[in-house]
Image (cartoon, rainbow, N blue to C red):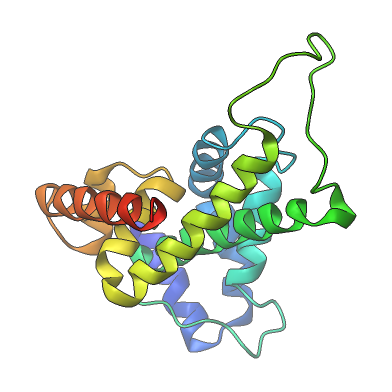
Length: 191
């Protein structure tokens, strides 16, 4: 699969219009797995499904107009871009759900136990997603490699071994970057 993805990405770069249509079936299962892993970490009440997340991310990655296809440096670059697209979609949805017009002021209450007061209400969880996104953007401006490790490991659900391979580093280096970035983000968010 790796070789086929690389060939299709090269064909897209050369401007072959049918290559973009051939790419989705090849990468779909892996993107769907990554999306499902990411959504499993989301707060209860998430209305976006893995299939919709994959399709939206893919549409953002590949322009079917045929004139504005992205330039990919290989499989790793493509999946890093897919992870970023999924992250942005989830952040946009969190921001949308915070808006009053979309019920942002409302608190979700389970019908089974309406007196149940939870530590983390749905609104607090959406706020946290936006907070993490802002901190991650700041980290990306200071240390792009550490930010990429976070995006691939946390938002895409890749193991640190897979992240290391995609970014051309050892698992130990990926783990060090992950540990550093996680500490940096916690410090930034807790300010």
